[in-house]
Image (cartoon, rainbow, N blue to C red; front, side, top):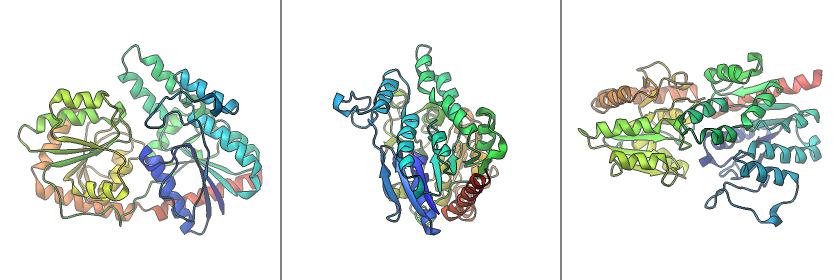
Length: 411
């Protein structure tokens, strides 16, 4: 099978989407399929050498170290470039739409080279043009972006609310496109319910295929750092609930010598950095970003507890990686987290989302109970090995491709 895998940004450190592209493409070639990744910037790193990468350049207006830069007029080549620039200048987020416009143009010239097209969360309206070419089309929706919008708008100051709503304007496009793709993949039953509700998608369109984990890379270690808590947040946004963890840490440190590892790209002088300073915990909270796979695996395996205080998660790859590392989890009872970590008290302890008192209590109980930490960690490792693997993810994904291909044949 010849597969075109699309992702508007795919670098691993952009979050779970980059991890998904890298490991799914590898799993697919392991099954004998040909895979070509079409990606916007930042481009993926560490793709299997058997996977072909086609770069789909954009104006790259959010790149480091000059985000929201002003491109030179010589960089503007066509209407798509102008659309990208105008949308950014009017506080919108253009990448899902403009990436799909560019990749649709490429696929129109290469229609006969692929058996199926798989979009990873872009859901730009130009995908419908790809479907009209006669190419079977599948899309992954990790979770409905409308949930992010709801939390971010609620957390914004009154004068910023219109700007936040404008930023998330692309969500309406994604809702419309999703309704017109018969075969949709998502990563949890919880996400499937939320997508059906928020996007008004027929539940019959949705196929649940959970994410996987490399259990050879993420594995337990005997070198745990006493009272080390790790939290991984792909973005410095209210949805991730990091502020609740920081408030809990400020209380717990009174009686404990804590070491908090926060893996997230924090905004300079942003709300999280300011809160760390205000709470007086900058001496025990250490932030990092851009870690390699090995560095992240070592850090996860060194912690006594992994905390996932999110207000919503469509899946949570960090939860699976923590379980594979034998690291006990304290997670919010929110979104797909209970589904991913399993029954409360087996591999993880669940707390009320946004409840600092509950989070403080549970973290304290676990840090004071080495035997319970070992029991939860061992159970988590077993669950990760038994339930989550990229080989299974790839095989289940191929079955959805086959459904899409059969649907096109019979139309």
